[in-house]
Image 1 (spheres, rainbow, N blue to C red):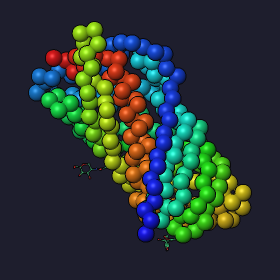
Image 2 (image 1 turned 60 degrees about the horizontal axis):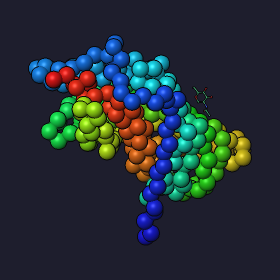
Image 3 (image 1 turned 180 degrees about the vertical axis):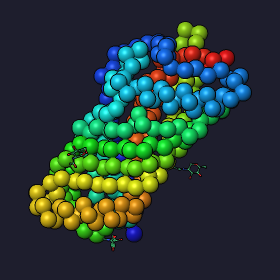
Length: 249
Ligand SMILES: *[C@@H]1O[C@H](CO)[C@@H](O)[C@H](O)[C@H]1NC(C)=O
Ligand SMILES: *[C@@H]1O[C@H](CO)[C@@H](O)[C@H](O)[C@H]1NC(C)=O
Ligand SMILES: *[C@@H]1O[C@H](CO)[C@@H](O)[C@H](O)[C@H]1NC(C)=O
């Protein structure tokens, strides 16, 4: 059995103002490393910061965050039932700012950050093209789509390296990996089969009835794609704000 080549590509763009160094926005909470409840403080402050990012943050050079614009995302073929690459462009990711942080911790010695979160409602909306087979059924389409993930548990693992700029310590992340576990998922692909409505409705129905099997096969693609988006966001903040400004000594 030939193993399928697994490809994922993602591009994220923000309307960014280039900022060399910044402080965290003044209304974001800070945590002291010596706080006996450092992890509780982190959990609360990260969650608050995500909500405050809803309208972007001029201080950090970030434009709007919800929806987040994603120019391009490719979810590669799976190894089982999904024999099609899903090409997306002009996507908007809705719902990130509703995320709840369940726990977060920092391992300063090994430069790692761990977090667990739940996002109640996450929707990828935009343009797709695909041509191949899913669950053995032919699928071909080019149009608008929605992919909705409900109550998605996400585990985050960030690995940093230290950079010293003008005597200050910064962290930039060389890796940001996530694992995703949605409680439910739904697909809506418009204009399948050149707009053959009945066929298209039927395929959407089969995809939705079998979402779990479909997702399991391309889960890694979603994890890489969404992980790359988070990676980019985290580096935007950490690469311009000194570590001491984020975690007080
Ligand atoms: C996607 O969902 C939005 C919001 O519910 C809706 O306005 C839009 O028409 C949907 N598009 C498709 C292709 O399902
Ligand atoms: C996150 O990690 C915990 C603890 O290792 C595990 O029980 C849980 O299943 C993981 N969740 C996801 C979404 O991978
Ligand atoms: C999809 O799920 C339905 C309902 O669970 C099942 O009857 C059907 O066999 C599945 N379809 C495919 C193509 O796997």
